[in-house]
Length: 116
Image (cartoon, rainbow, N blue to C red):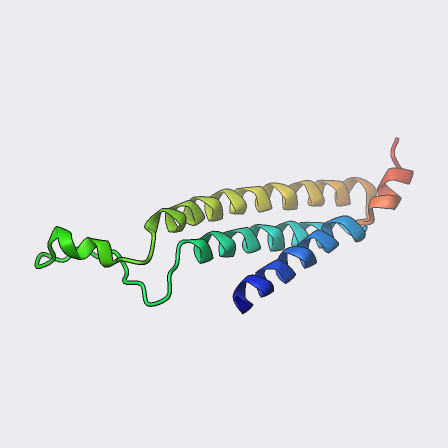
């Protein structure tokens, strides 16, 4: 239960960074925190206490497959999400660099004021 609470705290911290901060880099960090908390939540959903990992061995039969407590589907979704998140992070960093080249600041209110 404590892991879920810590996950909610990470999500709230990411939302705070995304909403309250004016610095573009801090907003990017907030987006990454939200992404990581969602990945952790998906992994936590697919885990059961005292669960066995679904590893196929030659001596196992179909009766033993019902004992598994770890679902591999959320793990596959998280792997896909990590790759998509990396691409999104690279795109956000590229946009931040272009904004800095044009306006010489990372402050969102300053960029709005200098719009031309």
